[in-house]
Length: 96
Image 1 (cartoon, helix red, strand yellow):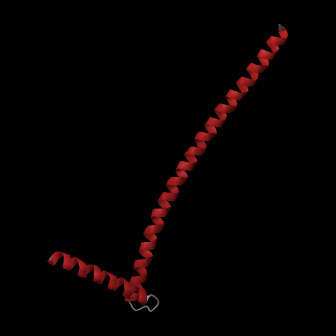
Image 2 (cartoon, helix red, strand yellow; image 1 turned 120 degrees about the horizontal axis):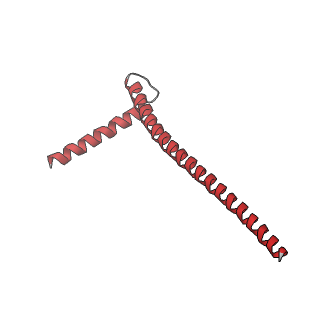
């Protein structure tokens, strides 16, 4: 009978250790999920910031070209032509 009791005690100890390990792993998993969530939010905010900076850079390039810089003259002309076409289209839609 004592052999069975020893086996049961050993099993109980192993189960307790497994439960503690499981709890530790679950806690670690929650911490990692929290870090992933924070990282995703950081990435999203940085992506928005990058897009805003790209638009600002493009605006600055156009302004620079309009002020006399020859570096991006072609791009600026294309952008102005595109805007003129858009305005013409809007005027045509309004006159109909």
